[in-house]
Image (cartoon, rainbow, N blue to C red; front, side, top):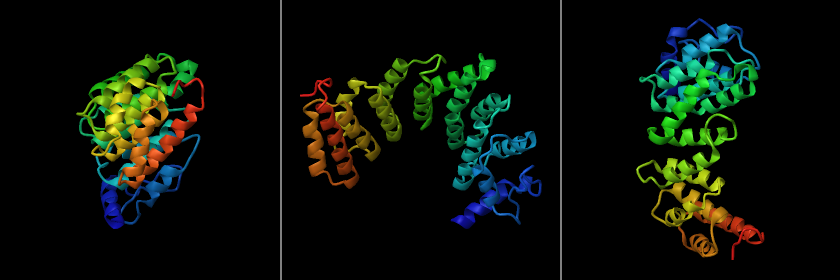
Length: 281
């Protein structure tokens, strides 16, 4: 598998062979260089980066080769490095948007790019000289659209981004985030992993209207990720009768991971019971 990953990445980067990564003494993979060079570059942390470095990185990011696991991982790490730059390149937001909107970019790469919208927006919001940034407004619009109509994992990714941004003055409130989280968790047409993410967000925000769905999802027959999120929800938000449900799952379920989750949720539930403000009986 490693050999295959190397060969695929070498082919993907052949246009860069011999060009090198400016200022680093590293070369993009060629027939003579293993993909370790790009991987090593992606994990280096730096507070600054030359314009030539950034141009080389973007050229690599924009290649349509993210279906390979090794390449995708490296690209995600490089995006991390770009949004951590201080100062951030002036065209960073526009380039992230273009890459996200590129129709030929695969879903996994679009998801990676969408994950980096929130860090970009947070960085801009801290910079008083860049308020009113058009890219921020466009990113917020894309996040809103992805939350409601995003394909596959995009809706879950957008929801998490919005949760992290709701405390800022960027046009989204925590109430809005919670409302959508409940809606998304209940939508049986969505991926189980996305619904599980939405349930976790709804739980963190104390949205008790999710409890009825959590009681159903916690039982056997549901996807593992959704069950575990539902069990956690019962521990953090559940009412008196839910303790018996958690005990039944712990004692009778066949999945050790589920049994462990139920045991932990029981502990959280019982800790809440000692707090006179919870109203648990």
